[in-house]
Amino acid sequence: MNQFICFCETAKDIRCEEKKKLVKIGVAIVMACDLLATTNALAVWVDGGQWNYGVGWTGTFGYSDYLHSTRSHTATVRHGGRISKDREAPEVWAQASLTKIPPTGLEYFYGF
Image 1 (cartoon, rainbow, N blue to C red):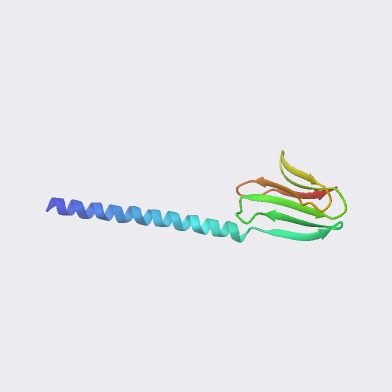
Image 2: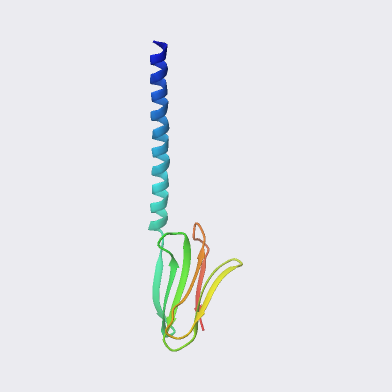
């Protein structure tokens, strides 16, 4: 009889651990969805070129992409002392990105 009670308690403990795992997975999913829901990206026409910038779709990086058809141009992402910058010729996308989780406090630039 004691063995049966012990078996039931063990089974109960296993179910409890499974429930804890499911709760942790659920919390992780909610956090990921929340992060993805707050990601943003903008596409604007400035100074004769197209500039796309913002938080990447995975929510783990910020990016700045700039395309100009007649001038050499740059795209930059900065966070504190960390900088990603790319310079390209006319008609070539300048693409810069920085990984940061969460992707807050990032600054985005384009230039010539």
